[in-house]
Length: 467
Image 1 (cartoon, rainbow, N blue to C red):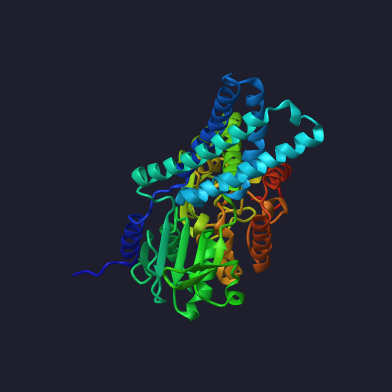
Image 2: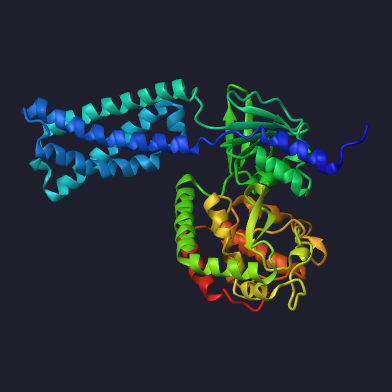
């Protein structure tokens, strides 16, 4: 019997990993948050309208409704910051009710304080306000209880995806979590193998919490990989200074303590803003540039009759592979699928139209399709091909922090590019300069910075290293 080839074994392992991908619960949670926000706004108006009817015999009396409308912005502001609309609030209705009541009390006190100093408090009926607040409190708690019942019935009580990776450490019987054996999926935290990192990234896709249980000597490597994957990660018990822990989590029911070693680079609100910016820019760019894209596609086709697009596997978020689109700029028979050879000045592989689109960076524009697919972002660390080298070394062999740049989606442009770090990587410094900029970008992300990088990119579309 013939032995399976390494490529076949890799394909089999990857297929089994794909079958373990869990569906994302983020959209479901977002719908729940929006529903609760709308319901809370409606109940405030209903409570004060009913309070006016009970106290003064007038349904939705104008002063009562004005009270509700003045209080709502303060309530929502406090509630959004104290966790009233968060994962834990969906997981525990008592926690959600307590946070909602705290937000209600603080917003009421704030409005009374402002009303006292503006001398407008006498314009409102104390009876209506008091009754309206009481009714609002009752309904806020009731809605949280109803949401918990719906979640238990329709979501089977699961509001987040959790996974435990067993790599030979202490047992960790985490209720409601999936369990993965590192041996079964050939996961080695000390490896630089991009195929192993792709398997790990696929297994961690859509996971909200990852707990690793492993021997002491492997914990530092696992801590590093969890940071690179951009997930919320914990490791069962280890001194904080070695792992760079950012918090401690005690599981009393399991008699176990974990150290939080990674939280992901962006919070939910930041991810929503970044994704909205990405979709708006990519969609607008495709529409505005569609005539140019069509002309370039026709010129590529007319030159040698080959395919318009060049599709190459690159490293993306969580060190997972994805297929990146570019306009084909090289002769079809000389395409470099693995990126083993960097393009150089007067490269004999580049076509006439290819030289122009590479010099002007037009060859990168099809990546707006990758942005719309959610595989890339407008701004982020540039994705590299697997065969990319500097000084005849793979990038990850030069600096292991290279993997950490993949905790965010790769970008169409980035901080390194607008600083001039682009083109061939002949020397190790060419890679370390880019890596330093990428890690700086990840550590200091803001939407304003993304906008600034996009504007600066327009100024450096033509560059001496673009060939």
